[in-house]
Image 1 (cartoon, one colour):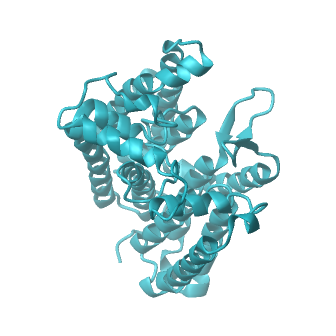
Image 2 (image 1 turned 180 degrees about the horizontal axis):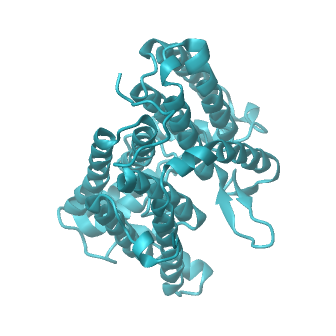
Length: 394
């Protein structure tokens, strides 16, 4: 088989999902070009085309990664899922001790000799969901058993989330919640999920109360705990800092002034005031430029992608493909919805980006790899998986 022929790697599978992916990439390219004007003046002497070409470069690499990944039968990824899981542990440990501190967060690891940084939590998220799909698939006979079926899976989920939490609590919590949903779909007992979820929620609630009632001077030297406190205070309007709600205020101004049809591509004003308008608040810029109609279309594209993923689950004859497609789709759609909720101040600012749209480098490539996995399931859904895997149906 010639792995490098266009006939083999050309897009196959669900055409609507491919159209959604391409639409998000193109829309993201336009949005990044529009929202990086202020950044270009600060760092590139006004060369706004620099970030356009940079984003186009990473999107192009991401697209070819997606094409190649989807051309390989998804059962292959089952075989390497353990390796990717343990590799993610190594990367997360290296980040904790040797990671680059950017914007007061030690989430990035610098690749030696190249100088490129990437968020190891992005890779760990994909690796964990891939491993989770594998374990749920091969443990279907014992999945209702707490010790044999549930605990071995939970240990990996908890360990990964704990490694991510110190530098990126929001990603850790979203990933943990996503894994609980995947376990529910994978026929794990609701009782077992409750036994774990309820204590986690209780401890989290007590932690938030403790942090909110602890003076800032006692939080020094405790990593990002002070940042978490300020974000919660800003969201709940308890902060005494007059500039505390600066980001959220300008995000809401962008949305409010966009109206129904928006100001047109490149017409955003708030992009010049919003910090990280090209990543954390790019949905606000899109809404200002394309209006409520554009904002609804963007949301609709993610939800439609999720719906098409559910259709893959219904077609998939075995558990692994179904869990892999729905797990990764759910993770990225939930991330997108939380990003949108931050823009309208429904939840505290967490720094989550909009998948395939926000400015990025290695994050786009890793995200593209994940979407390639989904499209691999879509492409080969009619083919049998390894015989040892049992159907998802009860």
